[in-house]
Amino acid sequence: MPWREVSVMEQRRDFVRLALLDGSNRRELCRRSRISPQTGYKWLERWRAGDEELADRSRRPLSSPGRSSEAVESAVLAVRDAHPAWGARKIEHVLARSGIEPPAVSTIHQILRRHGRIAAEPTSPGKAYDRFERPEPNQLWQMDFKGWVQMADGRRCHPLTVIDDHSRYAPCLKACADQLGATVRGHLEQVFRRYGLPDAIFVDNGTPWGDSGGERWTRFGVWLLKLGIEVVHSRPYHPQSRGKNERFHRTLAAEVFALRRFHDLDQAQRAFDHWRDVYNHERPHEALDQQPPASRYRPSPRAMPDQLPLVEYDTGEIVRTVSTTKGYVSFKGRLWKVPEAFRGERLAIRPSGQDGRYGIYFASHQVAVIDLTVSKSVSHVPEQVSAMSPD
Image (cartoon, rainbow, N blue to C red; front, side, top):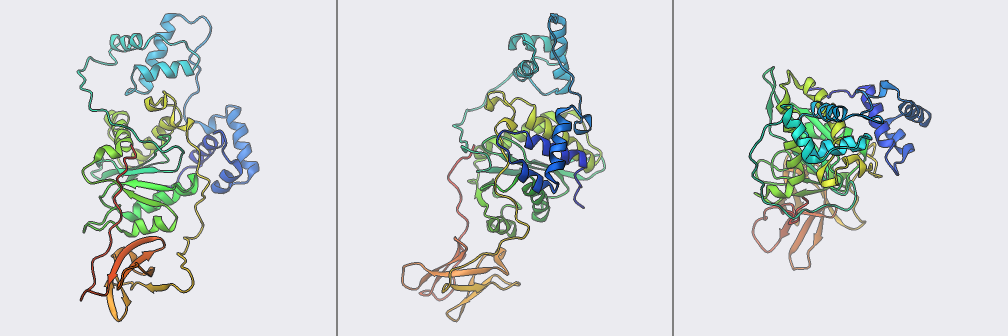
């Protein structure tokens, strides 16, 4: 499937949104967007002047002095109709943010029920988990595929989601035709050029983050390591550690997929683009004191390089290049197995401190071991499964 080109209007809107965040480096954002600073500031001026070409929805004010209770009730219903999955608490904060003095949450709930917007449903609150949160944006992104959805044209849509752990900001929401590493890499390259590089990405153990044969080292993971991005895997059978992403998936299902059926991937992507903008910049988030994720997000200062960096080793180190056809390196007259993901890569062989034992490293990451005291090579070293719970 060819990559979907982002429209000029979408690029301008995303640039303006990021440029208006406190502390953003507007010159760097201009460079990443491949525009001159003069053009960037022109877009900002148009946005501030209310240029509708930079917005895809009305900025209609919801309040004025002396509004009657009927007007407040109408405002409640207007927010609900625009966002049918939002509850009373979110509507309360949206009204307050718009300049309307909102009624009590219980009153908003009754308004919605009285006008048939909601029905009484039994609730069964689940177990509360102790939450973990990185202290700054871009220190950790959570990435996953939401379960596939059938399109009207018969194809499957695999939503690729990326969430910033600190802010819950979603830099990526893509309608994919498959879950291949090449597909993910193509989308992430676009995301990295727009938002910069995170320090680490938190994933589960499935494809393409993990190998179908049980190995966690993949070509996709090696590509991330070359960019200086740590790959952190969750512990098997612990979905609560990916709670932020799982919660995002439930919200996506409730606010996008539960409300309509999409004809094809292009239509789904258009809906994703619109909803992601609302989610990041308007939708109140309960975990953020009812503020939108953009209130806590800043683009990463680490820019995506134009060329993939090469792994450098110190002078005097024992360096071997893995065959491009088989995952082996030669040392002391014998072949030693390394993960297939490192075919064609340069690896360093370093003494481990024990007689006859060496570690095989990709940069600072140990990927295999050599033990000259045994008659055959040993299996490779898997990636470290993280004991942390980023949620």
